[in-house]
Image (cartoon, rainbow, N blue to C red; front, side, top):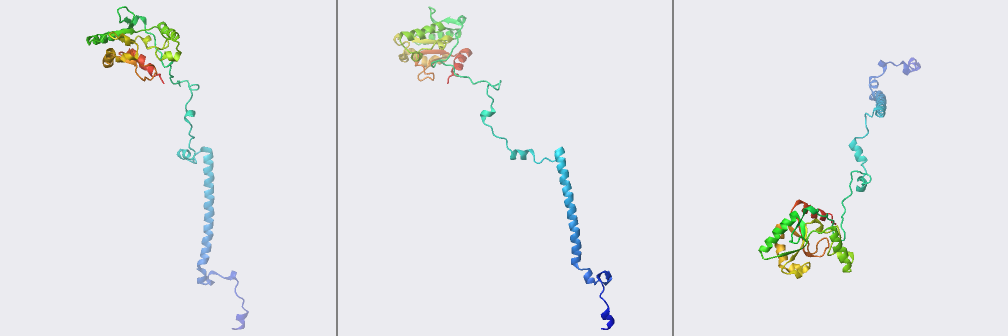
Length: 277
């Protein structure tokens, strides 16, 4: 090597030109990767900026116009189900709800139900002396029944039909005092005034004309008259009011029968019974 070569300084980096950089160095992948990475970072920052801007706009629109509700109604129902209230809380009481009506309450006295008094102009006698009367419809059917029984050799003895409130006052209170009975005991065999089926004009006490000793007694069930009634009374729309173990707790009265052969009589007795506990 000559002295000229030794004294020459190496070229500075700034003095290099592209042609003087070896091709292998100019096309090195690491240089391209660095430039590409720089471009990617710039793009990411731009995307993040756009996303932040879009988020801000979305929040502003939601707050001002509610264009993007957070959850649907169904989702809100699932997330916050309505509280289950008790039946007592959901039903208004009669005091707060003018349309509510209190349930009907039983209106009985000592096991007997209230009955209206028959109008005097609708009462017809079923005995020659006029002592026993029934309402027109009941009287007609009773007479048919008595005639049918007589054709079979059975003779009824009508004992008591319609009773006014004053009549029942005597039957209940005066007899109770005579027999030294308390009200509950007397009510087993006789209703207080206003609570007797006899007030209606549809009820009648029947005896056997051939065996009067059994009249108004449980032993009436052993008479021919009772056996005939038991088998045939229903054909004339009569039924026994107080059979054995009746739900009203009234003593067994095989002699006491009532007419239920028209709308008025049927409603009179069966509406009253629906009030019983």
